[in-house]
Image (cartoon, rainbow, N blue to C red):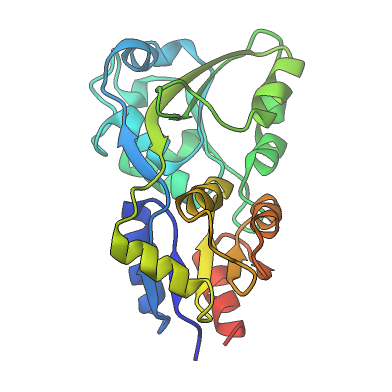
Length: 262
């Protein structure tokens, strides 16, 4: 039997992944380790949305970025012009973000993303697809999350590539990423899962940081992690996880990896 799995994505995504894994006969439970709080449609976010037509492309770092920019998964209209009248392209790092863009009403023909069979869904794979679009003066908006202060923050690798190519880059936070407030039962479950053979499914290094900060005295040497990117694997090993397994980030690959660990 596959091991029980703790899905550490933000709550809504964790619920969806838990259901999809259950449909494949895998016992999974949501265990969100990042809380997502949308930014109000005001200030810099409202200004960026109103000026969407000024940009060659808007890069959304995640489905949460799309949802925060479009507000509660509603179609992005009204903006000054309907989306189908804009020339702005959407850059997506992976299938989850692409699905959110389609839900928000972005035309498929104006979405750029890594190929479905790309080894990873990340900024590097996206840049390989969109780099030919960038010239000196190309304007790009990056829609991402922020910390508790609401300031846009995150990995800046793509920003560096764009700047080196002469692009003009603006960034805006569409949501805030906050550490979870684990209750007593959740803390007990996490401590048990550190040693009972459960499998922690991580799609973010930040989730690992939040977990270890919530339970600073927990020994993770007997814990098992399944990670969807090598950088996350490095974070899991640094946190002390005794067994760290890599997988591609697709649902099919994750499910197959879980089943292989039975």
